[in-house]
Amino acid sequence: MSRRRFFKSFFYINYGGTAHGETVIVSPFVAGGASDTIELVSGKPWVITNGLSWLTVSSLSNKSGTYTITLTASQNTEHSQRTGSFTAKTLDDKYSIVVSVSQEAAPSEKYIRIDD
Image (cartoon, rainbow, N blue to C red; front, side, top):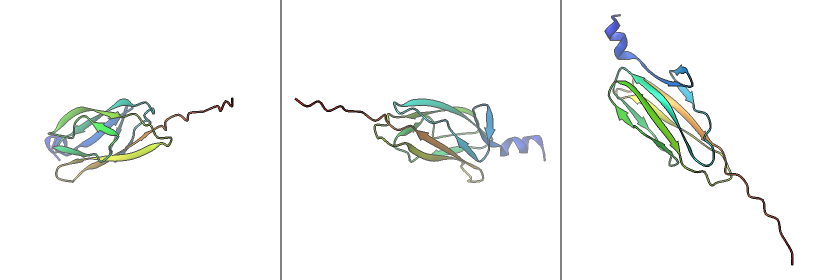
């Protein structure tokens, strides 16, 4: 296989100093909202499909190359953890990576009843 042909076939995500080829688990976001980044490296045009209403992905498609993508979780006001995933894939559907994300629950509020 020629070197040029190999270059055209790679597709992976760098996160936490490690290259991931099938699944990436992103560290949990804090309840108050936060951002994190992943690096997508692809020899082909790609697209991200994100159906999570609480997570914004900075770039949803591009051509081949190396891209830093910012993931931003909005504030979680619910008292339960949120989890979900989105998919990054090449336009020809030959390669895909599932990115799993989660967000901590909002802290419970404690009330003290004071009787008159």
